[in-house]
Amino acid sequence: MMEQQLVKNRKLVLESGEAFEGFGFGANTEKVLELVFNTSMVGYQEIVSDPSYTDQAVVMTYPLIGNYGINEDDYETQTPTIGALVVREYNDDPSNFRASDSLQNIMKKYGISGIYGVDTRAITRIIRNRGSLKSLITFADKPLSECMEILSRTALPKNSVSRVSSASIWKADIITPQSSLYEHIHGDHSGHRPHIVAIDCGMKQNILRSLLSRGCRVTVVPYNTSAKTIMSLKPDGVFISNGPGDPTDVPECIEAVRAIKGQIPIFGICLGHQILSLAYGGKTYKLKFGHRGGNHPVKDLITDKIEITSQNHSYAVDADSIEGTPLKVTHVNLLDDTVEGVACDEDLAFSVQYHPESAPGPQDSGYLFDRFMDNVYKAIETGKEAHHA
Image 1 (tube, rainbow, N blue to C red):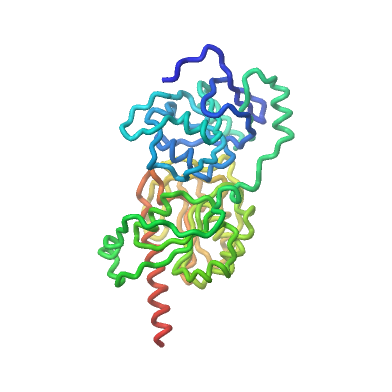
Image 2 (image 1 turned 180 degrees about the vertical axis):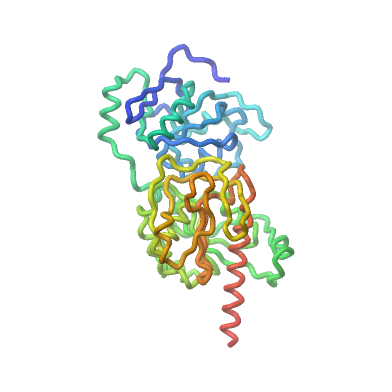
């Protein structure tokens, strides 16, 4: 446990006027950020290192954070870009044989602000009632009037994807392939290792692991890579990753997917789901407070099964906008009926709003990567047949 400070030295101020004083940890910086909450009980390292949280202050509803430290294996990106953490109780003396550092040290290293000792239940209720809010993490002695002036004149950034996407095209390292397991279940594909081009909008590392573990070769490309360049890499399939912010802020990616669809199998996750929907003519909108947690129930309309899913997004696909497009809705959220998946069977293209690769998290949805691989191999076989014909 951190040694209790006698004087509260950090403050969280909301654009709606509420202020919460607490104790600082992590980087000692002042920031204007979008305030959201996450209901996960474990996985703060993965949350801190998830690029989808760029420029956001995340309120953790689970009260104790930091107790198992940080280890080298569980990062979702090596350079975290989350804005801040807001927690009820912070533990700076982790007990875990895997821990190589404390959460506070990592937050200081990457300029991530933190505040603890605040009423996270009250803050979460405010967000649920009023929606995601602009917030300021600052010093406790700063006058409220000055804080409100800073909030009123500071806009939230709109270029998040460009700051977390890969800067160049690169090939992912091969991890221990488990393609033999895939082939045991789905059939032998004569050792062919399909080539997947992954469009990086802020991709989590476990997505790469999920593709590589199925025996794929993966080439990662920046979010604004053209369709011509992507197709020149001769992919067997295209993956569109998760990422931060509004999907309409990345028109280059939407245009590339629009040009590619129908030519090659496509799979999108989270922001990638929204981008695929927009490429087919759908529309998106911002949710009141988003979905962030590890226990969201989703119904697969294809199998009628209920999956427990991990989610992290502010935007959703408008269900009405899918009507009249080649897409069909494949998954729905049982909490609020929002669209959680779409597909165009003819084009071998589909996407989901949630994270089947979540770590830690439920593993109900890992089959979606296998579904993608089925589509990839189907396209490969169809291409061979057309070539021989």
